[in-house]
Length: 373
Image (cartoon, rainbow, N blue to C red; front, top):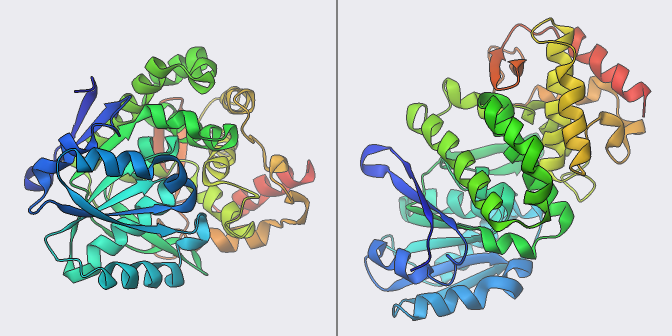
């Protein structure tokens, strides 16, 4: 068996393991077989991932005499829509899946979110397994049971909390990502240091370049540390009623930018989060929550990692306006009693929720940033 690290998400009888290491895809059958009620599963993936990894997963299942079918989706964020969700559900039902069967989400965050949401409602609830193939999915979206599709009104607004039975994070698969996709995932790695682990952030400042360059041991260490951090938060606040909201550092700004760029290749999710985290530190400094020098430090690390770090770095930023971006933010899931809720920073490694931020302060920050575009 492949050597790997195990992180436990402790949710009583709904708890599950996250396995982190290289070569886990080839050994997937060993880990999946004990979970199945019958030797059968349906793999859902997209065209890009299927070309790289589907045959490997099928072979791994066959070694344990597990039969499978595959549903292959078009790639891209546009699949996280009503239409994409309907097409997936109909394809799965056409395979005559049973309630006791497992779905296997093989792919990045889009596939994981879509499959998880489908599993939460098909046959009134099915089990599923996450096999994340992107860095972003391995450290964030595959863990914690948040599943969703997008609406015209905003990102991830239609969904459910539905925990997977197992997460297999094979860090060797990250070698097949484009440099841009890898960097976008790295933004979510940085997030964990910024919101709750200053030592980890300092470690990333020292090791981030090597991690991005392909160091397998460093990648395993980073993924395991992020998953450990998220597992603890999810176990304490599964439905995001308190501490779990801190995991949205940078996302209020980032989701608004994704909406304004049409959930397109102009701005990947992780890129939006990178800009959003930098903006959150800028806003925190302007509100007197943290030292003024922290925002430049964060921006320098993000930019040095090849990520956009300022609003002016986003494609088409000159056409943005503060009022329109604010309107996007009003659809954020953290809005309470009509008020915007921001995850801001008191220090590197110490994030806080704030529901008393005046819209004028946000609009002023956006205007300053756009003036530089």
